[in-house]
Image (cartoon, rainbow, N blue to C red):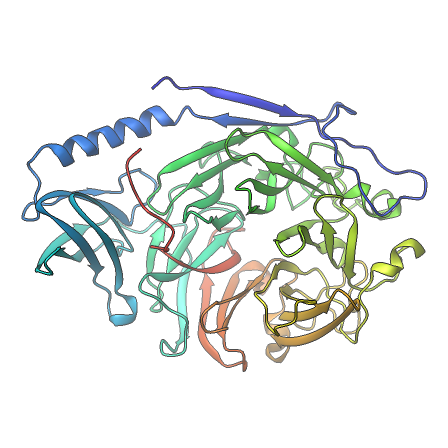
Length: 543
């Protein structure tokens, strides 16, 4: 296959409303400044990956490998050291069940491949590092006859940049666990990794990661990385999987990159805090657009072509004074980080997006088609009169420096309400709650009635932990779908030297408590996720 590289350059409109600053923004890709954000749909990797898969297919079809002589390829795509690929043929069509032996039942990883096949290419995930792993392979024919085989897979030592994991508590009877679920650490830099209830690492990637690590509807991963681990800029977005196979690669120009530290040197990002999949399959990304104002632009990226289909500049939506008058003196690079968008969530119910802006202590909902504001959650102090009608009313403390706002499935059988779960750092940056600021951080669930424009708080966790668990930056909260438990990440404890992840029940009982320490600078847990290595939508196959 001939390698190709298609480059799409999109000029981001920097139009700013200078007269009155209305509340509905424009979306434009017209050339209006010299600043630009360019994206390349990179296909140069395909030739090497295709050659690997041709080799595996040749081995599979060679006739040498049967259920009694299974071929084992450790780390088949050179990106996932605790994975392997099993290749073998059977005379009769058979299903395959695999089991990677854990230290106990809760840490044994299992998966079933239910199609009757004679050619078997079986991904093995969840191996222990530096271990001779015992993998049980159970084969069943269409008559129900079964046979069991055992494969031993030796892995290498664990990468040094992964944190020390100290499990304080793990009540596996009350935790939400499946046959292959792990707790994933999404870092600000260095390695993404996942560990089991004993604190043993069972998956990690050799490709460095920053902030963007999302499961997609097809079971693949949206993953932000670099050209190489020693590069300065996170500007490569991958669609990949836990085995390390690449499906799409998008290269962003590093010229529009910036960093969160405000320094002129050090690691930088183009896609900075979040990326999600839209119902269309396209990606919605928070980006730096190359202008002096950073972390205030959202783009929709066409998944198949790499073209930027839509751009939302938050300066077209929010008051001019917010960005024109924002104090940027603390940044060495002179950039203005006035909004600091750290999450975006799509709400299918009304084709809208919910965004979080740390530096405005604000969460808000915007119509995705028109960019018109639907509601604003936060303190209305300092907002122009024309925006006051968008503020939700209710006896709810204003959040401060919050992160990771997500929409929950229906909680009260009421079509007029929406429940939002987010992590409230509780630091008043511009208009947070000054009375409680910096005393604690917490996960919060609020219920919004969009018809009545009201808000109420329905669940919190964290205030009771006090200042010891206060985190001035980063953090996340997730709702686990089967139990309703929450996975809460206090990512920046002890001035960034400790990340603490807890799973708590709806009643506030802690059933899982983990401390991460001894990680490299900035390699803290930006977010924590509970994902399954073998999620139900993922199916491995050769291209």
